[in-house]
Amino acid sequence: MEMEAVAATAPSRTFVDKLKAHIEILDPVTWISVYPCLTGGVMASGMMQPTVHDYLMLFTLFLIYGPLGTGFSQSVNDYFDLELDMVNEPTRPIPSGRLTKSEALWNWSIVLAVALALGAMLSINIGGTRGLVILSTFFTGLFLGFVYSAPPFKLKKNILLSGPAVGISYGVIPWLSANALFSDLRPEVLWMAGLNFFMGLALIIMNDFKSREGDAQAGMKSLAVMIGPRNTFLVAFLIVDLVFGVFAWLAWSWGFSYLSWFILLSLLVILVVEIRLVRDPQNGVSFMKSAVNDGFGNAIGKSDIHEHNAFLRFSLINNILFLINQLIVAALIGMKYMHS
Image (cartoon, rainbow, N blue to C red):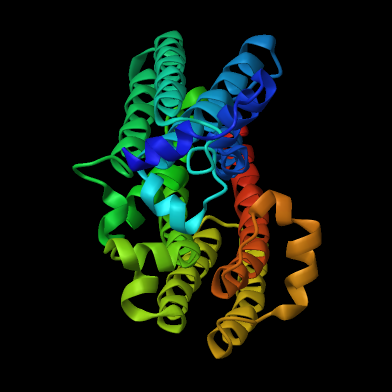
């Protein structure tokens, strides 16, 4: 009630202000997080044709996973995390008074309805086992996006539940859905989905730095709260290094020997960055500050928390290298099936 009162006393907003707030609560920056996996899944199928039909299906898939699916989960998160956001992110649409809670409820309800309709239409259009894969994975993603923030489950309260939920939603599901869009599931795609699961797990562990203060006050059990920044970095870096190591082994076993060496070279670069961050969790890899703050700040976010800014600098290097490698392997997998 007190939170609603704060929102109710905010000055009146124009239609454009309201529209901007409704878009902001969907957090457009996060939409692109699923696109690399979607792109990889499609490329690995090797079956997409340059036709209007296939381009429309691809556009629909990107729409339901980006603005609708990811946007839905972000809107739900803001709706149920008002008290936390009053501490951690008071400029967000609801705590700042630019949207009321009832308006936020309408926001994610409408987005959910549209996402469900389009997801069902896409799966019916494809049909068969592939249609069931798309339907089940997309609905699972929406379910996880809701229970991640909503009581009574509120998976985000415990890293043992929140990490796997994020890994499945942002790593496994997009790869499988995108691959099923144009072909039966490739065995290699199952491996790539698994690698992205663990990479997503590592990144969400470090992303919790930004809300460490509010999480501690609310009793949220993130690793950053329980074991501190340096140990959190160590746990996350161990997962990242294992992902790159297994990735290199897989590339070699699939016959992509040159790529496996490039993956190992990428891992070497990552290790150098990790060592600097473990030594100085707040200001490590400071040479990347200008690139993050001035170059990519609007795309990957900014923070007043030193450890979170250090994580953003790491994620910029890590994600670019991981993205390049997985798009190359997706292309090689697709080419293999094109010629088979």
